[in-house]
Length: 270
Image (cartoon, rainbow, N blue to C red; front, side, top):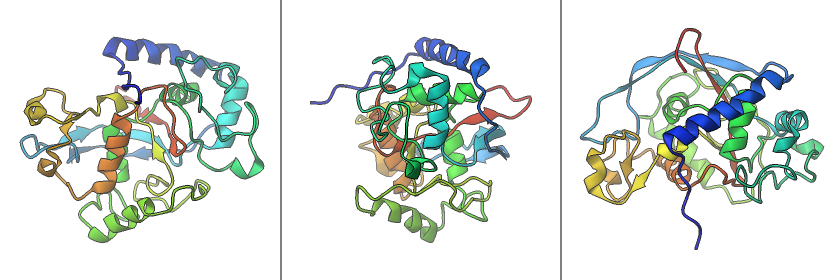
C-alpha cells in the first residue's frame, strides 16, 4: 500500500518558499524565455461546480515559453550541488529523483533539450527561485493551457479536445520529444502533449469522495464522485492532471512529470 500524500500547511509552504528563494541570488543562469500572459476577469475554471460557477479573475503574469529542459536543470544542479541526485536531502526528493540521468551531474546529449522529469516539487521550486520565479498556480496553468494556436480559450472546440486526448492514447514509454512545439495564442508551447507539469498549489487540489464537501470554503476542492456536476466535465485531459497532482506529495517524482516557471507581471503582487 502506498503512503498517503503529505500535505503542506500554509505556514510550512511559506517557510519552504522563503528557504528556496535563497537560491535566487546565487544563480548565474542565462535569462530564460518568459512570455507575458494578459490577465482576465472572466476565466471559468474546470474546478468550478455548477453551484460555484462564478468566473475567477486572473492577474497578468509571465510564463516560461517551454518546460525546463534537462540541460537547464543540469546547469542548476551544478551551481547548487545540494540538489544533485546523490546529495539531495530525502525530505526534498524521493529515491527516483532524476533517475533518467546516467549520473548525478551528467546527462546524455540526446536528453539535453528534452523536458526534465522525475523532479520533486521542492526541486522545481528551487530551480524557479534561482531565476527569480516560482511555479505557476493551477489557475495560471489552466488559463494558459486553455488556448490553441489562435484562440485564448479553445475548450469548447471538440476537435481541440480530441487532439489533446490523443496524447493520452500513446503507448507508455514513448520517447519524450524535445521542447519547442507549436506555440499557442499566448506564445507558449508544450502545455499539452509532452509532459505533466507541477503547479505551485498542487496540494490544494484535493479530491474528495464526499458530496457534502461541495460547499467547502476552499475553492480548489472538487468532488471526485460528483465530477458530473463540474463545469466542462468533457475536458477529461485537464481533469486527469488534477487527479495526478492531487495524489502527490511535494517530494514525489514521476517519469513524466516536469515543470515550468512563472513570474508576476510588474506591479502585480505574486
